[in-house]
Image (tube, rainbow, N blue to C red; front, side, top):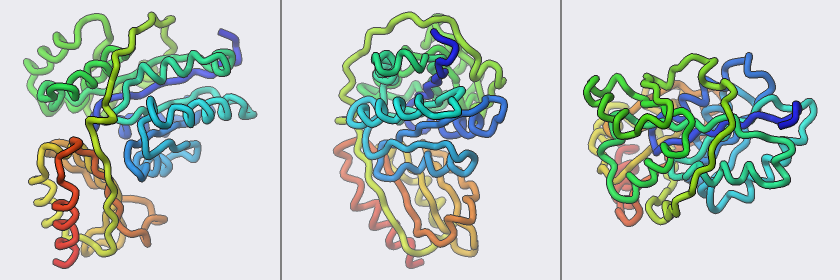
Length: 305
């Protein structure tokens, strides 16, 4: 590795595990030096990139596809471009979509046009401690693949489970990987981006995850009633893995970022630049669930309340 090689950190994890929260923490730490963040969202709108752009200007968006499949060539081109920036970057952070296997990104970093300029520092995988054990079938397999590729696993949302459940999760993940329990993805900064020893190779597992999920975008034109929206979120079908976006609530002049996973929803104030924008929500659901028409009709009806 030459002295000018740029460190690359890969952040992965299943839908709703807390990746955007972690990236926000990284982006707000000036001691990381000159840094760029590449954000991949599975839907048509890259909501994660918009959120992170509120705390750093160095955000690059790859959207409407999975970073390890349909937009892999875009990732390669973006990395080549970033490696040529002057003054030189100190670090690049790549957030994988929640439906991505990070092993494909690790392989991309080994391409000849990148090896002379970039080196993989670490792969961090976040696990939703309250939802990991409930995943089944191909969803469980994808989540295990994300964990298997990690140098560091964050058992995030640890406050939502018991000590016994955490211990069981640690046993499930195994002793090969460093595992840390976190709340809101909070870990010591030195541990977060510290240089690691050289990695061992991993054998990628075929992942037809693009066939497991579907994503769509809903755009609204009116503010939504807060109570009705919260009630609606609490009754979303379990086949909706993730819901995120920008909403306007009745009685509030400023819009909110909405993040929903499982039975939990979070609203945070968005910056003033979004004040005139219409509502934009991105759904990620089990493919074939046939929920779009019904859920969009409910949102349309809610706008008229």
